[in-house]
Image 1 (cartoon, rainbow, N blue to C red):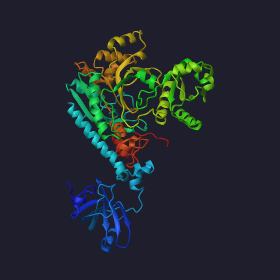
Image 2: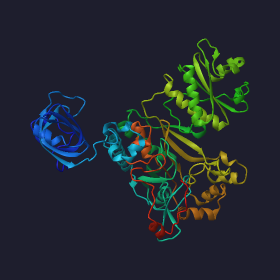
Image 3: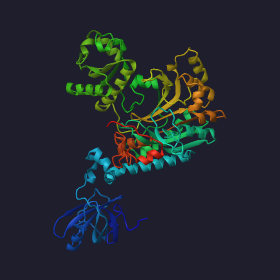
Image 4: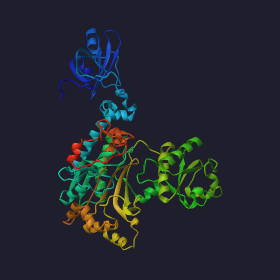
Amino acid sequence: MKQSRTNTCGELRIENAGERVTLVGWLENMREVGASLAFVVLRDFYGTTQIVVESEEMMAAFKPIVKESTISVTGVVRERASKNPKLPTGDIEVVPESVEVLGKCIYNELPFEINRSRDADETLRLKYRYLDLRNPEVQANIKLRCNVVSALRAAMNDEGFMEITTPILTASSPEGARDYLVPARKHPGKFYALPQAPQQFKQLLMTSGFDRYFQIAPCFRDEDARGDRSPGEFYQLDMEMAFASQDDVFGVLERVLPPIFAKYGKYSRASDAPFKRISYNDAMENYGSDKPDLRIDLIVKDATRFSDCGFEPFAGNTVKAIPVTGFAASRKEIDKLMSEVEVQTGNKAYWLRLDENGELVGGVSKFFAERKDELIEALELEPNTFVGFTAGSRLAAQKTAGVLRSKLGPISEGHMDAEKYEFCWIVDFPMYEIGEESGELEFCHNPFSMPGGGAATLDRAIAGKLDPLTITAQQYDLVCNGVELSSGAVRNHDPEIMLKAFRLVRLGEEDVKAKFPAMYNAFCYGAPPHAGIAPGVDRMVMLLAGESSIREIIPFPMNKNAQDVMMGAPGCVDPRQLEELNIAVTAVEE
């Protein structure tokens, strides 16, 4: 449907020369050449068209119009004398017969140039997001998002999944992040919660007899922002399968994702199925991360045998090493790299080099002088190799090494195949961990996951015959280019096993029934084994677009402080609304 226009601004070609057309859009720019000659750029959602003003009458009509006003132009298409091969419409121009202002821009000065909005301050961009979105480059990311979501839906339908929407207003549930609470007017003192994920509902669908479910699900979590995570809300491709195993889930995503990444991604290459599978422990040991970027071929090696080399930060600690050939950097560049790692991790990194003559030089080399041959053999070093070191507790040394590896890869010749999408599965996550705040045993990820070994493993742990921290869960993450795309699991569908799993974190039967009444009761009526996963749509599109910030692919994102500066949210409400909801607001210091 073209409404008041005969063509879009991205549609006209040389074969349209001689036609009388009507175009509508935003007046992007007007360049006056003389008293009766001007070149006007008209822009709409589909592209731009050049309008050539050649009379004093039309000049008088166009000149008062402020940039970014919406206008309707009727005129005749002709071939351009000076063609622009960079534009799809670069072979033609339109000579106007009439122009009408449809929506007047009353401001002569814009907050930023539309086509350069990405160079503007982010706060300004978010405040005037409706102007920022006029930038074709910004708009392209939203178009990409639309195409990707459409392709995901089509692929899931082809896999036999049924799209079912689940409630937005639900009960608060301990799922790892803070809830957004909604007061219930008809039930004073009680609250709904916005779902952190449709986790319980999709599992209940499996117990209800549905075989394959999915939705592009909105999720709400009151958590801090970062580059690959938006505060407040995000969307995920949520899916669940009845009578399914881990392999069944993997098979679906290994068929669905690679074609979409290859078609819509910045890079045309994506991993073929089956994706590489790496245990959590191996990922941490070899890559220093549970979301390794496998485009980088560097491997973290254990060097704890050298903790007694005389270098104090190594003493009594786990030591990790990353040998890198082809890393030719100055001392200043190395110091900068080490500083960046320390800022990001809070832990120092160290280095030395095996030069072309086979001598250890620089950094901490003097502490290895008497054990040079042992170091070369242990780390399989070749001449002209840089070695980065990290030290600390096992986890701290691993994580610091992981950050160092991620920084060394892109700046070391021949160690990163950057222009591709490299997928892998991280499997066998720990079921439990010691909470940083509580200091007690807690679930490491999803409390609804099936423990490896089932009830027998839990019985041994409850009896004190097995350390709960050694129990693995049938949980898995999908990682692409160092970004965690999704988490999933084979679910714990047996009420007896569920009670045993929660018993280890000090929750009894009554606690489980109170916190998860619907799920626990449903499982008591005969539940199928089921499994699922939920790739993040926002992160997926961010990767496909080649963006470093997730805000670039969200139509109306919040800022880093979870504020919508365009709409003024969160904001104060009328006292009468609070009274109606039986809510009293305590004084808050600004």
